[in-house]
Length: 172
Image (cartoon, rainbow, N blue to C red):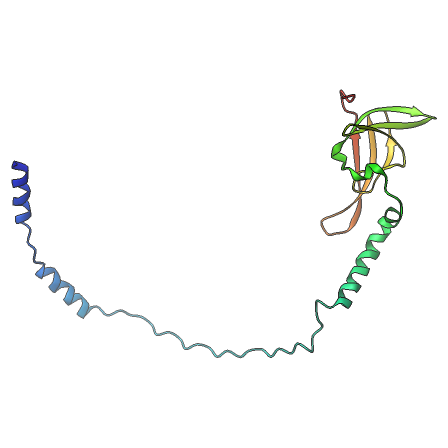
């Protein structure tokens, strides 16, 4: 109860009138003037004339056909033989899915044993494998070396070396 009485006494001492504050605010409004610079008038806009009949159509089929022919000629130097031959069964799989599990020599020619999934394939020099036109260049006891034809960042076809190493425990 004493706390309630003390709170009432404190609130009673507050002056609800703010006459002095209101007078100062009015005086400041009259004396202070903002210094805003006027805006420049807008510049006149002159639209550029558009004549669609004077310009070549960027989406014309003739232009696209010419561009595709040029691109095909550039690709043909490395890919000409690759595109005209029948693709082998190992070219359907990426190199990451293949494991070299052994090597043997058959008729004096080195042969690599590759496991793809559950199947075992025999690969000799000159065979193709992988999805990037990979051709086997060399086979030894621990490694199969091939070259792939891939596109670089600029879209040019380049040769890239690749290899498959003999995997330990390759029989599984």
